[in-house]
Amino acid sequence: MRSERRLVAGRAGQIEVALDWPDRASPVGVAHIAHPHPLFGGSLDNKVVSTLARVFAALGWLAVRSNFRGVGATQGQHDEGRGELDDLMHLVERVAWLQDAAPTVPVALAGFSFGSFVVAQAAAQLQSRGAAARHLILVGAATGKWPMPAVDPGALVIHGEQDETILLTDVLAWARSCDVPVVVVPGADHFFHRRLPVLKRLATRHLLGAEAESRRDGSM
Image (cartoon, rainbow, N blue to C red; front, side, top):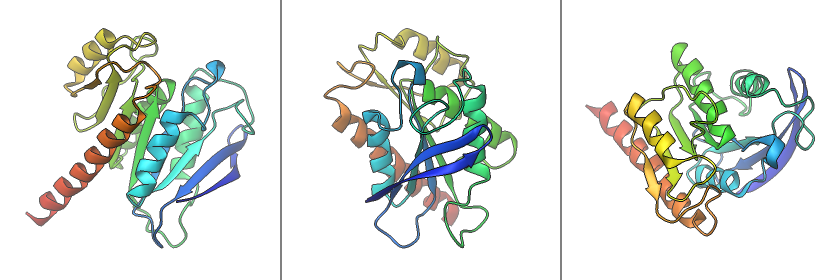
């Protein structure tokens, strides 16, 4: 995997991004991974975010990690999810990450904590426009903290059993409302300390399984 940093023009100034390139000439798609709350130390270097990026890159995706407004070299100020969503949609829709890519290059979304709130909204917007994300992964889904929209039941939702920041009971109540399963990691806290290998396996297996199911459905 090859990584690089760039500054990309955004709607409120420059956006700092980290690109994790797969070891192949043509990535299968672009995966955007969003980080935790910027006012509490969240950044694109967060370990959960970096783990998810490595999973996507290992499976052939270009993984894009972007700093939210006011973090690192990204300009602007924290906007409670509104400006962060605008910036993410700008990166998804306006920035040509892959040269000579088809207009319909697959897009995947993943987010951790506050980032899960941002990407869940982005997924809903893309769905409403008939351009649904190929994959959606939510870790530490921010229910009870922010108004999480309903997500497709095919999304992967992972939560720590001992998460004291976002209570599992709140996540289950939200998941029940949109009929999406929740994978609970026993003993894991909010930041998945000492549980990142488990997170990596869960995300990898989900993506491989979803791709295999999609191929089967396409051949029927």
